[in-house]
Every structure is written in structure tokens, then in C-alpha cells.
Amino acid sequence: MSSAAKTGRAELHDDDTLFSQPEGTHLGECPLCFLPLPIDPRKSIIYSCCCQRVCKGCVNAHIKSNLHDEEKLSRCPFCREPAPDNDAESFSKLMERVKANDPAALSLMGTNCYKEGDYDGAFEYMTRAAELGDLTAHYRLGFMYYEGEGVEKDEEKAAYHYEKAAIGGHTDARCNLAAIELRNGNIERSVKHLIIAANLGDEESMKVLWKHYSLGYITKEELDATLRTHQAAVDATKSEQREIGE
Image 1 (cartoon, rainbow, N blue to C red):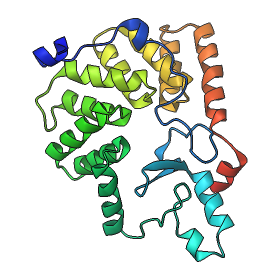
Image 2: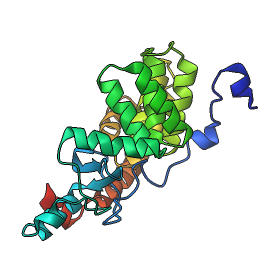
Image 3: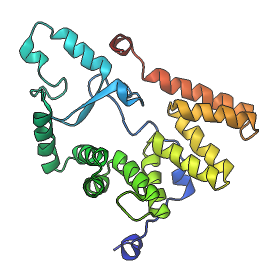
């Protein structure tokens, strides 16, 4: 049994691991066009039948290519199963994935519980999803522990889950770590977190770094290098198909 399990406390990650630049965000690639998924959740859709997140470009391409075939149009663009057409059917499909121990489904169910104010249910589903490696679940657990929502407030456990998500490319988790470090007076560490998030294409991190530059917390060379990498990450999520879809 690990020391964390014995003590009930989380083990934080070493700085070499924490401040390594991930290759991409926790969202990964669209399973259809294989381009990085946009950070903005409004630019993709997750289907409860397979719990796959598909970019809006591919969704709209699916609609356009099947406008005159109602049977194909009604199917999920990824798994080709009939897509749920109402909330009850969507919930039933999601529960099938939950019963199959799909981490994405468990995480989504936890998010739904959280939005409904069922923090006990949210914590249970998120914990199961996090144990299976779901990074969104780690982020949500970090938030719950930090705010003390449904669980006893524990900043060390919050930091552990935020770090776990951030290491995997979750930009919101990375930004929260930056905010915590800034509140604690650790400006250099905060800036490191923001640079990593901005390099992954996060817009808000880039905006904050501009402010830090005006305060002298980041050099012009560091800012310019980050801006180039940031723009490259943003451009990598673009395509003609996605532009039409928007």
C-alpha cells in the first residue's frame, strides 16, 4: 500500500514532472479528422452513445453528407450507432457506458451530478473516473477539494488532482495552479504554469502573461517565444472544415 493510501493524504508531484510541457491538451485529437480538439468546449460535441468527443467541423460534415439519408443522418458520426434523440434516451445510453466502466462516461455522469447539486454523486463518479485516468475528473475533484464542495476542504488533495490534470494537458487545471501560486506569492512558479497553458493554446493564459510582462515578471524574449508556440497550437486546431462548421 502506498504512503498516500496509508495516510489518506495526496502525494504531490516533483517539479520536473509538474513543469514539463505536455505534447497536447487532455482533449487529444478528434477521432474523425485527427486534428487536435479545440480547447473551447463549444467547438466539439460528446456523444453519449460512445462517449467520444467529435469536433464541430466533423459533425457538420456528417450532417452535410447525409442530408438526404435520414437513417444515416440519425446515427453518431463516430460509432455509427443511432444517436439518442431525447434526454431520456441519452441518459440510458450514458448509463450503459457507465456500467461498462468507461472513464469518460463516469466523468460525464459526475459532471451532470455536480451541475444538479448532487455533490455526493459527483464525487463518487469522479473518483471512479479519476482512478481510471480521466483528467477532467481529476480537475473536478481538485475543484471540489479546493472549494470544500461535497467534501472536506483539503488544499493538498486539491493540488494533487489539479497537478495530475495539468500534467496531462488540462489547461484549466494549469491556470488554477497558477492562480494558487500567485496568491501564495510564488510569481515565478505562477508564470511557469501560465506559459505551459499558453503553449497549449489557452487564450486566457496568454492574456495574463501580457499583464505579467508589463509588470516585469516575464521577459520580452520569453513572451515572444510563448506567443509563437501559442499561435502554432491554435493554428493546429483549425481547418477549412471547422471554419465552415462555425
